[in-house]
Length: 147
Image 1 (cartoon, rainbow, N blue to C red):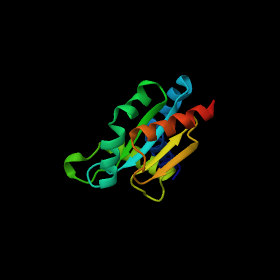
Image 2: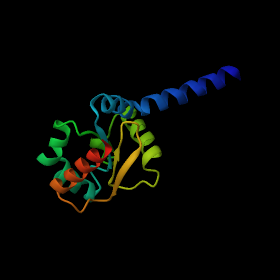
Image 3: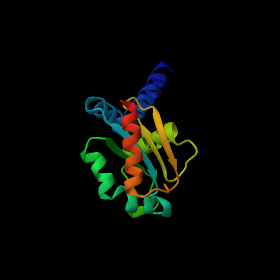
């Protein structure tokens, strides 16, 4: 019984540890570089607003400049449905753990701006109404207010 309990605890610990890997790495890097973390939940192959968000905002030069200027670290927690787009088992577990922690309602797209400790500073439910420049400027504004 003791062995079984120990095994269960170790499995749970390893899942939690691996599930937080990208976020924990981002937190450390964000602390070192004084950056924010942008966490986006998407369904890249089935959610039309998610696809539009990535095409119109995340792939735009204004958004990419946020990363280049060390304003944000970007994490995409994707939940594709098509068999050909499936993620590795480890990444699926990690995304599920991120969803449990930050997106328990299962909203898509759902974007959060976090500080280096993982505290939520701002959220966007659905497709933001702003264009890429306005969205990026909003993030820059939150960053400025953090100083």
